[in-house]
Length: 572
Image (cartoon, one colour):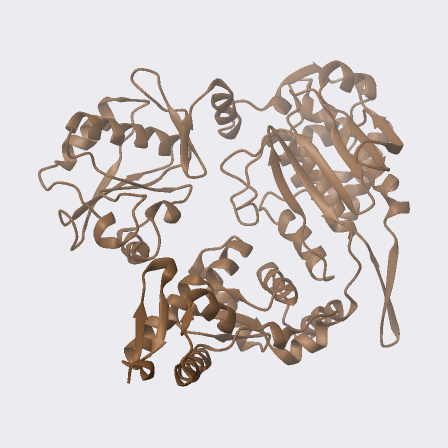
């Protein structure tokens, strides 16, 4: 949810952006219907239901979300609208009852008043009293269909398929290989010795996987025999394909086995295709695989523990010449998406299974696993995985990339100085090795952070001597320091491709305008100015407005796409 001061700051951007572009999962802007009180109240109720079903959020009433320009977009809410009546309407017309908090934000535009409706997280699903509901997905409210209601039940823990009791706790249903592999993987991750020394049934009891002398599905997923899995978790299986093309494969293996055995076997199948590169550092030789082991383990564990075992279909591993794809049935839940997965609060589809794996240190419930995966690749100079939600499934793609030795040595040297590069810093540095610069908003999107958070990271990176900034205000951009670029870059022309500084850009444009005026040639249009400065359209426009204010001799002619800038000497 957003505080009034946060909304006030966002409103400042309306001169350059429409409100729709400022919206997020937990923030929406709505125009108040001043012609029909009934329609206005209905919109308030519908938005309350939508936000409540998606974990809460803020709705700002009184702002048109498709109009650019603050004065035009902020229409306001009539002063006679009673907040207490709106509260009562939402309470009376929702089931279960929703109790919103309304706040008034005073503005100089429109009626002078905006209403902020704050919806706190609750226990969905919520509907209106007619049984209709919606849920916020991204920036839109979508109908609360049966599938989405089931998804909410999973997210709130009302239904955990892996926690259901399915069979008598009989040792004959357990795989000795599965149990030994489970212990071996957990021991390698330094799980508690007193836990691993327990007998088979006692271990499963301690993990909460046996209840009332009956096995849960989670117990069988971790240590069940093939037959037990076929009988009680028919949706669990996996397939490995070594692809020769998009439609033909060479090696294929299909198995039904406990999760620990499945993960280890897939890792074995990948081993011949995951070669080692040796990097010399002084007297030492370090070995790195194409796909780091920690990244593979995290990806495979994630695929199995977040799979929807009610949907028939395997956890699929496809190995191509240039990439590796790992996918599982079951889309994201709990508001997690590819755009926020790095820092979103973790959401488990199978809480009991995940809890057991967490106690064995095989997965992490603090959402550190995704960060470890990203970090393992980035510190070797490789791009992070691509994570996609395709229909009701999730696919993770690792691209095949060579080790960037200079970058890896740089990371190691920084670590030896006590400066461990975090995922955000690694993402920004890798971006800047491929692009001449990055702006704050782009860095925030790249790191899945708020602008204020990423500014802290950028400032720290500049302090450490990694990057430097140019421009001012909204035109600020960041570039890797030339000496560091020369040290860690594999190729490229960093200094040639960088845009010139703000003041230098103004000097350069002014010089060209004067020269052209002397020769009697036309001035510059926006496109030409962007070519000279490497700025985008809006930055070039701001630069020219500033230049005109400082140099009255510059004359603007034409409008919009036909705008040109001339130096007044031509008329003198």
